[in-house]
Image (cartoon, rainbow, N blue to C red; front, side, top):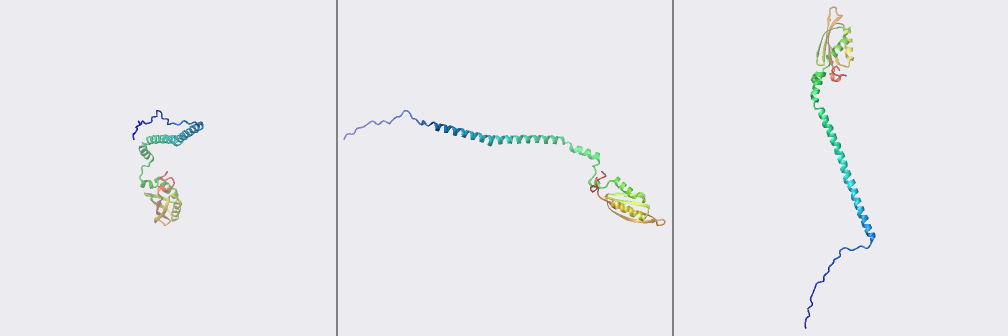
Length: 195
């Protein structure tokens, strides 16, 4: 048997068409509408999801910068506050220590003693130490001393009143007395420290 040999040649194709032509125009319209809708959705997301939030953050940042500028201006305005406060203290008498400031105003104490003892006895001396006041009276009577004490007890500046000593002079109708007052601290009185 005799074999016959054929020459084998591979098939050749000169053109390959990978894109199929759509012959349906409605499909192209649907594809274009879908693409337009996708782009519109992407645009809306970009506007509301990104740009509007970025714009709001930018506005808040501008407000924050404005407030920082105002704070810096206020700090610059008040940088001399300590020196000004020191001048104010010197001018108004606010230079007193806390213990001195708690003491009652001396002029108010003298006014109080004068008002309560006027016509009821002669004040020989007044001693003031802190909130304690000692008034030595002469040429008065027990009745007049009791009226002085009653008037002092009614005064809101006075915490309490005592008579430490009473002595008879001459015929027994005229006496001398030491009246001790304890005043409320100036901070608990109205107006404080004579103000």
